Length: 459
Ligand code: SAM
Image (cartoon, rainbow, N blue to C red; front, side, top):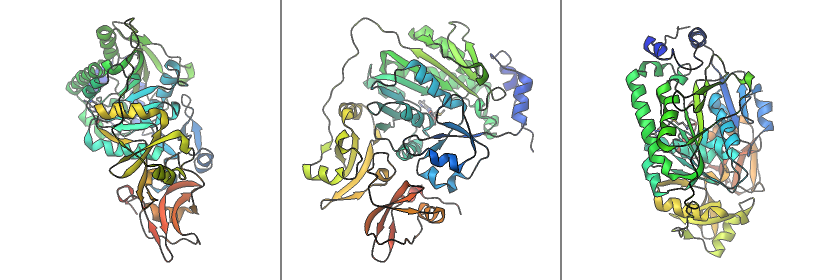
């Protein structure tokens, strides 16, 4: 095996980092060990995964599991059905940060500002209540598609995906109860997984990253409600991007640092920032079963100049006629819990109580995706959309045909498939009872409606 060489300037820069132990750190990078972990979508599947994989639990996340070996996720239909998300274990600690600082039983508005490809967003969505809203934002246009795809696969209706620069959120002052910033960083925490990143590391880049992190934080803080919670994380070991950012935040914005409880046997290092003693949590791969990660939680001060502004604006989207509502309702598990709008002929369902939020966000930001697309109504019939098939709001009484692995993979490759069934018309194709997408059953053939852009390309 090729020895992994960490740059000496990098090792030197970590000498004073809290909890850094050079020998153990270098050894674990050279060991070649690779850890694979997934987080299960509790809205979709649970038991299936226990029978599919050889797993053990990630101690700080209720739905997180380590796999004994890395399977081919591409060839697992459950992966495409959104039954789980492949996520690095340390970053799943966000669950603890949220559970320990936020009352998650309340309806809240959460912003995940740097969200692509969607690991933190899918985690947040699993924790918040159905009445809560998650705005999942990604500034880089080319990365929004994969974010929207992963959110669609996760299947929830209470998510809006936006494509905005952090400063655009200043159009929504005092709006969010929680803001999560998984900041772009120098990426040293992932050296073991992505050895190419090692060559890109430089002190200059650490400096650039820390300046960008400050800019992002300064831009976004006005949209956090007073008394709201800010969670900041990086996958960098550099103090300039971690504890020093915590110092800068507490000094510039008077946010209060929040301490999190950690168990001794988790191997996480609690740190205190040099100037303001703000708490941070470091994950070193020689101490935890996971990659490098840093996370810290803060509370924005509550000032006594009145309550946060109540938002209200009228929706600009076209509503459905009573007849059209009737057409779509039969496709949903709890149709009375949703409102429906039409956007370019496509019908979208969102939880009823989020109508004002959608209007507010529409007036301030560029929305890439909101709620669940149900499809297009033509002559009082719904041409169903793929998002509906893989959503967790679909009526599970919808006609479906269960298939084995080989047919499931042919379907996901968008190949021609043959099914033994007497049924005709639109039908879900399911694998281990989880919908993969739509087929249309015709008298002498089956039309495959799996989205072309999502199809499996390898053999
Ligand atoms: N939270 C994601 C997850 O868990 O899957 C990973 C996010 S990654 C660490 C950081 C993200 O920030 C990237 O998607 C990147 O495109 C985005 N980003 C880059 N520059 C940014 C900026 N100036 N403002 C906001 N986000 C930025």
